Image (tube, rainbow, N blue to C red; front, side, top):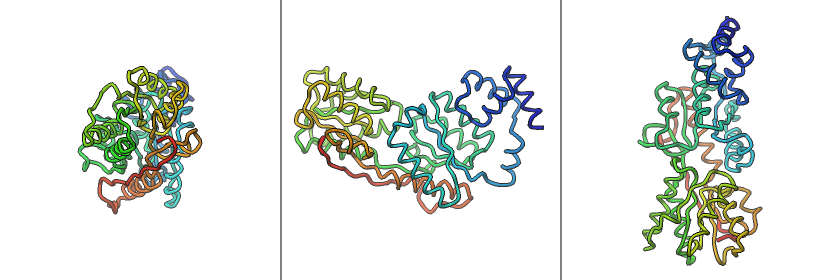
Length: 337
């Protein structure tokens, strides 16, 4: 019966049955146009593959899902997600669960993956990352009653289960430290502007400036993608100002390291002329020259608490934790600041 229905979907969508099968399995290599056509027909027919429907009725898959808004190439070079994925796998395995990771190059493909996961139930629950102000993923999963936990922040904060570090406090810590070391023109390179973490760390940065009597200059705030190239472009923009910044806070270590490398290319001495601080305290901090000062956000604890909470929700237990959990951060001083 499943084969017959997949044949019908293929005919209506104008694709091969093999393409239908790959779309239903969440294969990220499927052409985006074909994926949309198949999913439109699937939604119209209300189709769920028989084997997975039977699994949904009778037993769990023991799979946890994580969808990352990155290309596979970008994910491979991201130290935060490498550490996060490793920690989730470690904690999940203690409860006989496994992790299913998918990547989405665009917001549209990300939505398609979540829709496919909801239809097929090929994972028992989801760990969400990089929340947005209006997060349609959270709205959709909440309306379906599907188990999920967010690593990040969402408003209202008691609406969902979430685990996070105090991003406002962490950015305040970084900014205040730079001020105490004599810096006055401190720049902030955020990630994509729509992300909650970008806004929260910007708020902490502003609060520290205000508390120390330093006027906020919007020209010292720029945004970048999570890549060294994008960070270099943001740094070039900052260095075009007169006078240029004497310190930079990057949203993560990749952004901070990319900006620092660009500053060195311009002939600036670090930290004498300009200082840098990143976030996540990844191994990258020790490998760059000079070594990068960073805010350690305790990724293993973030991952562990999120995984434990999600498994409790999947198994119908009330988690032994408040709905919003905060993991403390700390400053790790190195040569760049």
